[in-house]
Length: 389
Ligand SMILES: C[S@@+](CC[C@H](N)C(=O)[O-])C[C@H]1O[C@@H](n2cnc3c(N)ncnc32)[C@H](O)[C@@H]1O
Image 1 (cartoon, helix red, strand yellow):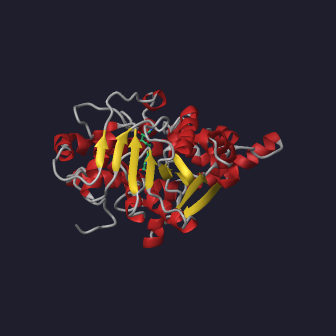
Image 2: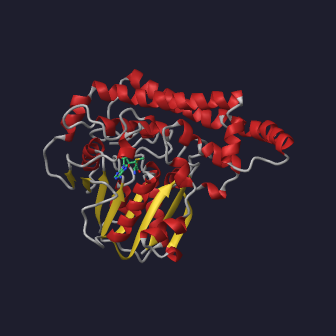
Image 3: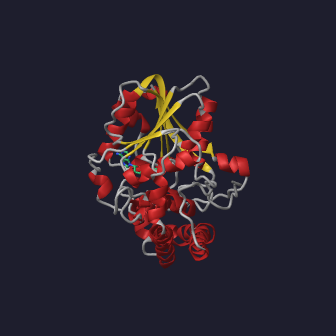
């Protein structure tokens, strides 16, 4: 199948779209791009030219942090209009991706159940308790979040997520939505050439967008991926098989995994940790420590922390905390890496942070700088942090 880089790659279980369904998704994608490139930047002009001078006049100083900026910007009609449009675009994104999935759900489930020789495996655990922090809120407004099942062998959440990520990233993560994983692989190979992992684990893999690049980057390693949500994993397994990638998926909570101590040489995650609670984050990092072999490495991709940003940039990136059902987003962006790794048992002198260029951008030279709330693409760069055991 030819790869067209303006469209998602049509693997076996990707929901098909009618002309109108595709047009609706394209509209949302264009709306998001328009908001990011043409509408969002004016917020900063208003902040610099109106809000900041007024604040200084009233308080004798500039706003000290994102919270003070938010209080002021919330009074600005322009910001309120942009914010409500961004929130609407998010809701429109989910519904534009739900409609095709609802129409062809039986076919998608049938595709996930096809027999045949399998490269990898899928192990589900119907007794696994879904964490409260996960089920209490429709994370980033995805209706029913990741785990909800409305019928037997449901794959709907995975199918909706796969299409929606393409719309959300405005196509800037490539036809396989795999830019984060691919960029992280390139970083690990360049920075840790001595690391020859025998087994790699991806935490909170969702439908495996970021997992699959590890199959190609580390052809001698066994690749494992876990998630709590069964509909994501069923979909992920079928998708990986249809793309010819061998991955062992299992339904587990990253806070307490069933692998033995020291089983992995490389443990990775991609935009996973910011969706877990403070307690789950600590437990998951302790599990990373337990599961890594001596000299093993953990690497996590997130959007950049607020400490290196000015108060306006932190405020705009913090939009998701208040407007996009991301309750832990702001919290994790404030955490100190030394503290996190030490608490998990690692030696903090072996930790690192890095801003890594997008592999897709480097390959395609296509992405332009965009950075606003609701934009985890981060404008052609990814923020990684981690620690070696
Ligand atoms: C934003 S998605 C991750 C995206 C994915 N890593 C990627 O790069 O495409 C977050 C995933 O974490 C999963 N998740 C949340 N809490 C979890 C936990 N405690 N253990 C395992 N998975 C969890 C969710 O079900 C969801 O699929």
